[in-house]
Amino acid sequence: MKILFNLTDPEISSDELKELLGYVDADISFKNLLPDIITATKDVKKLISTEVYNYAFESYTTGLVEGVYTNNFDSVDSNIVRSIRYPIAVNAYRLFAPTNDLSHSNDGRTTRGGENTKVPWQWQIDNDNKAQEQRYYRALDDLIDLLDDSMPDDYESLTEEQQQATVYYKWINSTSYKAVKNSLLNNVDDFNNFFQIESRLLLMKITPGIIECERREIIPRIGKDKYIILKDTPTEAIDIELLNLVKMACACYSLAWAIPRLSVSIFPEGILQYQVSDRQSTISKKPALLNEHELARQAFSETLKQTLIEIENLVAPVPEVVEPAPEPTPIINCDDKFFSAT
Image 1 (cartoon, rainbow, N blue to C red):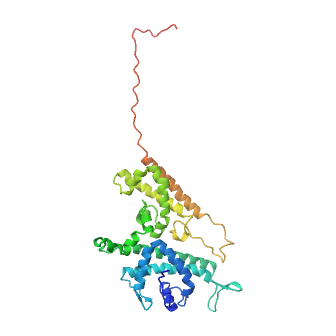
Image 2 (image 1 turned 120 degrees about the horizontal axis):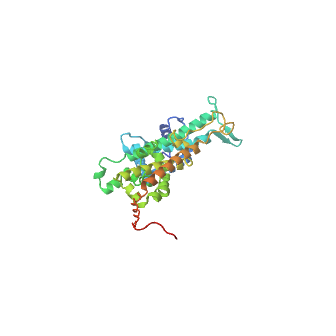
Image 3 (image 1 turned 90 degrees about the vertical axis):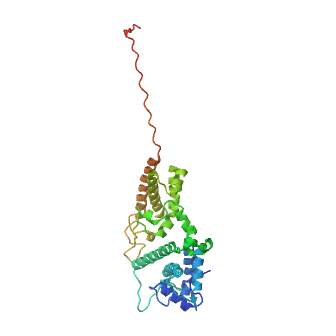
């Protein structure tokens, strides 16, 4: 497997980890972290595509000097290598740290300790776990932003073959990128009009919910023909209004869809509040908490229902105005005495 770290010299590999993770000890063992680095590498590769990862690996191997890779912050390719290695290192460490907190021996599991160390409180561990996870998500967001901005200035003037050789081309043709762009709500700025997420990573994670909303709730209400019109940048005022309502519905649906499925730490604090215990144990002796997850999901679902009603009203056909039939004029016979004995 292609790994963006030195696999032959343990001293160099430990230096690479320390350079990326400034908060760990300098003597951290790369060998112990390697299984988690492999797992973290697979996760990042799945997100950015194998083609982008292989491009970065070639840039990494080309830049090695006696087994050492030096970052060049003026180079787009070097920044991409650094931005891929960083989330891999963060994720690998956060996967490794919980197990490393304990010593695994023939006598079972015991707490690690030393002369100048002490066992942390459980709330401190929980806070650090949350911080590590959020650091990982921020690193992925930075990586995605860097890939989005990696288009060369002369990209349009390049030949097709030259374009295909760029990391930008490989990124915009990846499955992850195309999945987002194929939906009606396909950029963070549009999503922020309805709810502030400020995260390309979160948008990519909830895109399946957006697509599901389009398939289950939008197309059955507006029809495929109107859906195609909305995807082609509509110009009619009523279609523009409809598109805004559809995007709002997709935003609410996708958030309600994502809340039970994704980690709390990937959401902005306004959606869910991360809950930790202030005691040594997070399992017992904790008062029951309100179901914030379900309350948040219900709030987005309620807004979705109201928005769908607005969509239905907007696309409903205008009823035809039928002129009432004139009432018949009674025929009066002046010779009729209006009297009958039968």
